[in-house]
Image 1 (cartoon, rainbow, N blue to C red):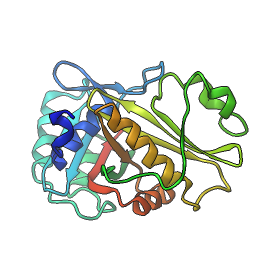
Image 2: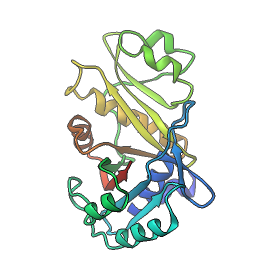
Image 3: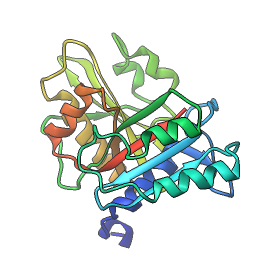
Length: 239
């Protein structure tokens, strides 16, 4: 077992893993594009703020944010308090929005999937070799992505895939979970089992499994609570 697997990252380190998984960066650590594993390059947001439960906060800026504006935002970021409630907006929310002259933002909780979490139901790995056996009746759209979103773990109920968790943001250090569960099969524990199975597969690759969502996505938050995920902070972006 490698040393990296033995050392638990701090909340600050997890937030760094998170932003590096979400977005591509240039040599100056400026944001470039959304780090989607499949082909395509959508632009990153202009501003990212990560607040953690340890009280550390840091921000990153897109490559086209002027240096003077970036410095102003950075000073405000340094004054952000410890985060305990993921629904609490940043202390300097209004200032961020005004300085960036924007009305569009995203925010949501960020979690680490602990090593002790195990799937409570049987799950299967979906690959290019077996995808046609499983990806029908609701998950046909995943066929074009399957090579890019490994590992991809599914829960099969009565010969039908009803929930899938796959890697939708990938770096050499961390993977971010992308979870999809069919309507009619939610609230039964299927999603939680799928996420747990995915996390095991990611750890076998010696990477950190991360789970994040939006503050208004209550279904995704219920999965996090059911699994007992480790809350480490809140992300905030301005488009």
